[in-house]
Length: 145
Length: 93
Image (cartoon, rainbow over all chains, first blue to last red; front, side, top):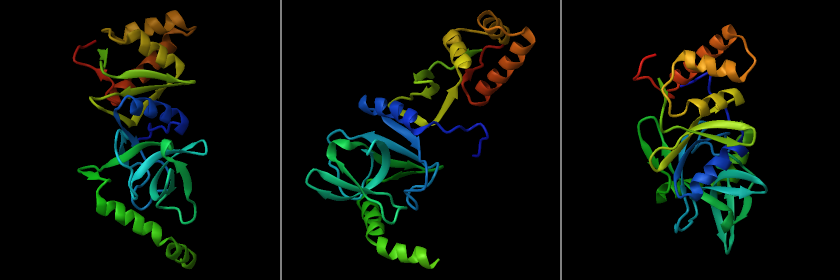
């Protein structure tokens, strides 16, 4: 669906709206930007963000979080007390350390053209974590190819 | 025609966006940005029945623009609205 009239709204502006709705307890659909969550989320994939509510944050979940003045949509790869470590599936080195209160929303579902994918399912979380753990291998593969 | 009822014009900083708030899910993967003039027109037309001529008149009353130019701009604007499903065209103009 390439629409020449499609415009990209600066992240900051978009997220001000998104966060306002999240705070009101609404779910918000956003389009994924960039490739940092490849191969699990791709550019322009539509993702449903849900407010945290009383939900338990577990490893492997993809979350929206504040990190150093930016907002990232990355996977929780490690939890240590009040600190959480996030990583983009597509990144091979960077990891972001955030606090629990920096988590703004959970990426609950992926909306495909014809189906909905539950991103919080355990096996999906494990698969994402597995992908994170083989980072050293992925680094090598990237160098070779 | 009318602007679609449930769409909301929002402003953040210098940007105006049109959001479809849905029931309990807000779709921001498809939002529309408007420039200041279009946003002003949106505010004026909101909730009213209007025709292309109404919009041209409005535009001319607020901005220093020739009728010919206004007609061209309004057509472009309304075409864009229509193409993106932002109009309720059940009533004919």
